[in-house]
Amino acid sequence: DIQLTQSPSSLSASVGDRVTITCRASQSISTYLNWYQQKPRKAPKLLVYAVSNLQNGVPSKFSGSGSGTDFTLTISSLQPEDFATYYCQQSYSTPYTFGQGTKLEIK
Amino acid sequence: QVTLKESGPVVVQPTETLTLTCSVSGFSLSTPRMGVSWIRQPPGKALEPLAHISSNDETSYITSLKTRLTISKDTSKSQVVLTMTTMDPVDTATYFCARTQRGAFDYWGQGVLVTVSS
Image (cartoon, rainbow over the protein chains, first blue to last red):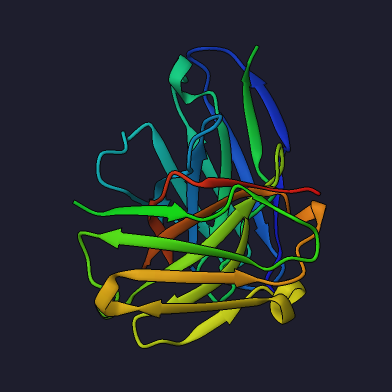
């Protein structure tokens, strides 16, 4: 199974900041990388698919980049509703594994 | 409108078999390039994909649990069923089903918390 490693595991930031989360795959996954946001006691929400494509309704403050084994999710101008846990997920091969998550907290 | 809803027991005893059903609406389980996965999340921990079934009935499982899992579907009933044998307290988790499109999980059920306890 393909392993995904996210960094950092947790991150403190202030409203208005810009943050970047990194996801590294254990082997090349081309551009088969997706990002999710999860709030407490809720199902995850798809934000970005295929590295950089925003899911319908997701604001342009979210952006993704990368290819091969290294990927990033950037969130600009943080607002209170952005503080959540973020997961990357590979769709290169089944099982479609996730990273361990990055918890974004308010400083 | 696409929806998925999980159903099943909220408490199972150790060594028992868990059976969960995902009822879907708003799309067909035979739609090409779509599938349904089961994903679990232990309290306070990360998401773990368990099993996937594609529109053409291909199945896949996470390697570490492969011997305990079976996924199947009934297209006429719009249901996907997951069975997990020999349940243990470490299997306590919220179990989600989710639709996959292009390999991304674009719609999720609300999840069901399953507790393994005697």
